[in-house]
Image (cartoon, rainbow, N blue to C red; front, side, top):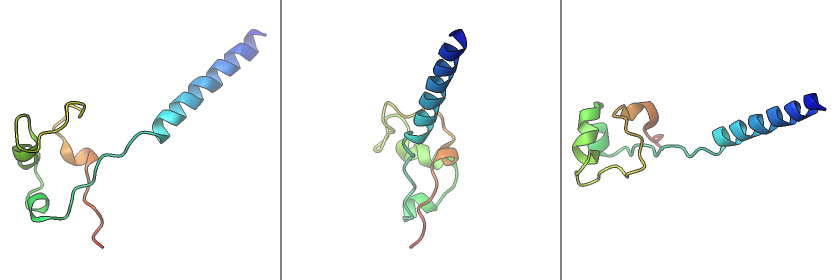
Length: 77
């Protein structure tokens, strides 16, 4: 009986982890406009998207300044 309970719990944990990974929202892609393609350094991003700037990041944004780890450019179409 204990083995069955452990297997059910393990299955529930695996299902929760899988759903968390699958339902995680993707970060927005960078537009291919002049402002975003001009520079590829984080300091350029933070000059507009840093705290107190005109297009500051939302309060729930991860506190990481490694922009290009998550954000990539939109495909040119």
